[in-house]
Image (cartoon, rainbow over all chains, first blue to last red; front, side):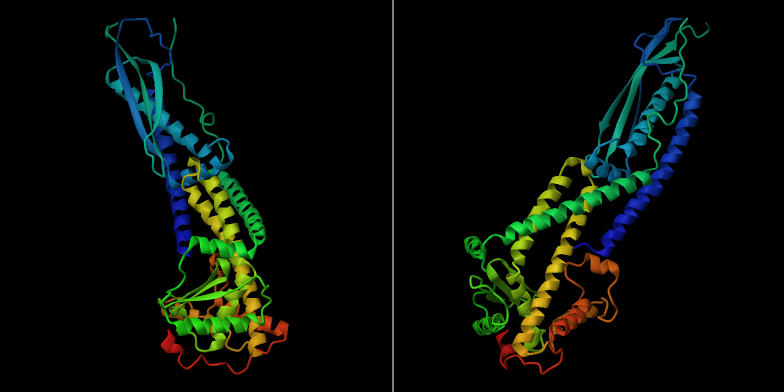
Length: 151
Length: 289
């Protein structure tokens, strides 16, 4: 039989998921935008043809992030799955994961003194099969490091 | 020369700018309405069909299943007395000719009695030992016989199975995650509204039978007072404290205080006196337990 305590527990879980999830999301987004503005000087390009304006050494750079959902998002997505339509709660989750992975890739490239990252690709994988899912986003590309540093 | 640059993306392209609480409100209400409507339809449909199954099929199904109800070796005197009381009550209940009732007894300390398919009624020692007089026992028994008369075990099973099938179909797919248990609970609660209605109408039929047998309904509320006392002993609310809206909504049975009030109201509407001499249980009753 369903007791009042179970209902209260469920509402608390939902509420804490929403409040903590929203605060964490807002903070993460703020930090992403701040770092993106810094790293825009190091362009990540999807093109497979690398820049040829000067000689470059090429090396693989990767950035990956594992990001978890919260109870509220997972619950709401479950409800949306009943009817279909855009699963909006996960949109921001995946958007942040992709941008964070790109930033981590750029950070690696920046440590190599790269000028660009070319042929950027993404891979997404759901890694937690539990009730509250988590996903990994991997961004990788070819960093171009100028070999004529004085040019 | 080609230039390469990264610009800040616009925030509202990949992420729909809709407040999550707004989505939650829309989808939660829609999902609840869907579950409630489906369960109500299934309860009605399952119950409607189950009621059309002849009573003899119920008996045959129970025989085929071969579940041993009660303790075969437990007190034959108690079984004889219970069946004899049932026969007296049935004289005042409109049981069709093809319907019969068998009372089983078990000397386990369980505070319960129930009616199941095929007119089988089960009484436990734990419940019988708390009853102060025959009127209280007759109320419980008439209530359970009324369930048989109304075909409630079959209707409950038919409606319940149909609802569970729909709920399993709805929440069993991999996509609903933690929402599935909440939706299932919503379905179970919707079903509970049906069982509560069965309990109320079984109480009404029992009051009428008691009026026929004893000429009054005094002592009919003794069981519900005993339930409240047991609950209070284990730290719950007392009978006078009143249940809140939540408790009423979540319970499978009506709240005992409401049932006591309903006994008086039904008695008055049927013109049955609520006071009178209660009939004692047989002197050897305690030794039969």
